[in-house]
Image (cartoon, rainbow, N blue to C red; front, side, top):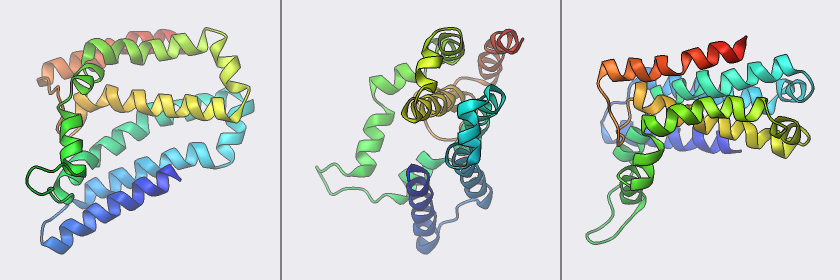
Length: 194
């Protein structure tokens, strides 16, 4: 349901821009749709059921939902689309666009998108889950497995947003820093893979 709502809202925003005479890149729409469809693939098909009983399939789900889907969703620039499509509220009022801007500029968003937070979260999510009894506990129920998938998607989004996202955000480091952020997690992922 969340995936279908996300696709519907994105389509509404893109159509609103087109009706108004603005252009919205087709590549962004394709990236967003494919990213959301990948989330649906790993959570709403037989792949999900196999992920509950086969660790190899679960790891495919994990990689798709934490590393592939977030990149595609972010390339779709959903925040930029929302900011362009949502109408501004009247004078002195706060509508959805103003609330989104407040969230983007909030202290909370500055913290959760800062590399000092995102890199350890990205790494700790792996080790804290798979090398503790938490994994067995979450895999014991469908709700736990879904919570794990939602967590991986959220972590992937906040990790990749400052690195390669096209949406505005509180942190936009230079290209060298982006590369360093990306490479900072690689040794931990490689060791985890071994």
